[in-house]
Length: 415
Length: 220
Image 1: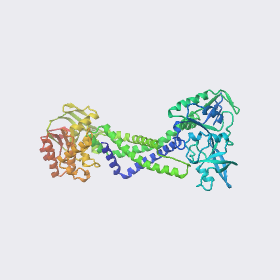
Image 2: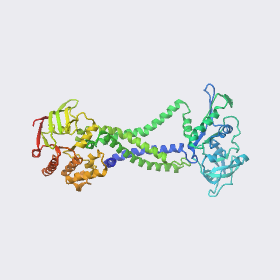
Image 3: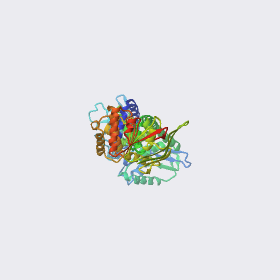
């Protein structure tokens, strides 16, 4: 039966090559956009190099302090001291790392200035993240305790800074902001779309200008808490929240009197979306409104267009419907037949889209538009794409199928 | 086998009402070969469609094996059409995108029958109509007579009790027409009940009984 449906669908496609081209072009273009978008979202939110353990990590990125009337608000990263007291000492996680947001710095090769993004981290950073060391190794607790002037650099910075990039650079000096550091390791860089791990140069947090000794709750640091297992995330979250709840209130920070304090340990995606939605209910409406609109434009409009094309194409097949009904096809079976046919066509479009997506992704990855971009079609992206194909096929197939299957047999046979 | 009581069929548009069948009472017995004749537009095909459950009467009842089927729902009607009735149409109504074999298999698709036996039955039916060497051809590659023989194979593949033929020889020359008529007669001899609409007196004479219609009314 299924084979018969697919055979018919294939023959119908071959009947009018131009219509088929238009239909497949529309479907594959729509699905390509969706697949690239899904791949990009996966690139942004999924667990990829060097943040492979995102699925069991909680991110503490922001502290929000509000005054008693809830009109004033002060928010941003936290102090190293605060994170040491409230995150680093948690008992349930496997490991906790504290690091700064990336800062700008300059280095000079001769008279040429190189703009740098730098980051201060603890030694656990290298355990929580999965950086690939192309040369050397990370700095350790010992380096930090000794206040050693050492750095880990990326392969990108190595290429920019050193003349002969084929030679190992571990043990060599780099001068940043007038201070000399010894290169202790070279890692493969992380893309700018992963701000937690993106930097050109990584310093131990005891290096100059890190401000790690700053007192108070706010500062320039963030933290990632790595749970032992995915299933521990709730427990770790609760332990962290329990500690935050015990912070005495009200308090004063740089002259700002706060009565409420919020610091959340959240999974990456939640944190990412939470920051967008933090602007209040109005922003939330706008955000979801835009998502709904984009989805409608990407899925709804082409589906409506395809419904239109399908209705007119199906009308050509009135006689076939009449024949099938005359020989015992119930309405339900015919509806199913047209849906299967439509899903088959959508999957054909999906297959073309998959090839197009691979090409687009390859172009994005190799264009240098996002340094170290590693967009992929992994199982998740593929399954979501498959689901999108199915929804698209159903959306554009059900209505014409229902309309057609309700045709009067005698009338259909006359056509 | 088929009983029609007080059948009326009215076609309505926004401006006009056409009475296509008017108070038709008929009883077709098992094993009969009945022909329906009448001028064009007198309601012959409409009557056949009502008998074959392809169209609903506006009034009256249709009984199949003593069961009143007029109020049956789509699923039940589809099952009856599939298991009890085989149709042959003047313009063959084959699906051009499917091979001869696939066309003949259509009625069996709507029974829970696996692919292999389905193909075997379809090949058997094609052998009966003398087309066993054309299974992989497409309808466009066949002559009119061959197409009608494929249509007959499709009508008989499910072994139905009733065959309804709407001018089966209408698009064929007399030699081809006779060939088709011979096949129908053989099917009737094998036990099938056949109702055939025709314009051809000679063909009608070869059936057991003749029904004449005029302006939607049975006159004989």
